[in-house]
Image 1 (cartoon, rainbow, N blue to C red):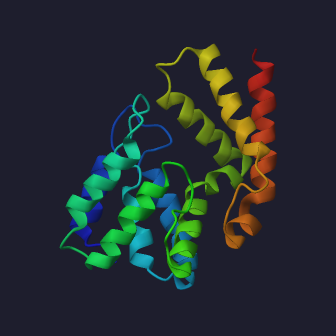
Image 2 (image 1 turned 45 degrees about the vertical axis):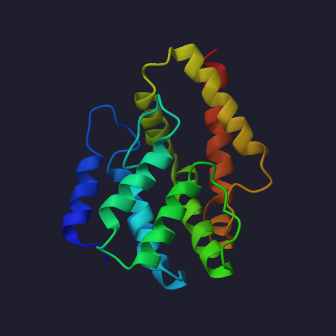
Length: 196
């Protein structure tokens, strides 16, 4: 379990009026799900750390948030948790950049990564109300983008999601979220197109 002072540092990093979806409520929701599957994980502490820190740095105008979040996590976690766990947590955070399991992992570490990445996308398969709040939070974070440009860009992102054979890469995530996520994404895409 994370030391309370590090958890509090992570919570403070998620404050700020510019944050919508990527506020502290995001890792809190993931931690609730994480508690239900802790026993499936090889290194649950690494996954917990990655949940708490993967969006610690979040600026929608930049493209290096994941790298910065991983670097920050490395500085804050080194010496506070076992070094192997720290290294795993950093790799998990880095994997959120492309949402792909990195090469060279053991099968146990790869499965932890698959589950973590699916946790991060669990909002796509949430209830309609939770998904709509997520979409509103994303729009809040991109308020600097004119509405029409946002609408077109967001539609393109959702189309790419829907074109995938699988949205979720672990069997757990696929079974839990896939069907509802596809329904939510299709509904959102219709709404975005109808605004044009």
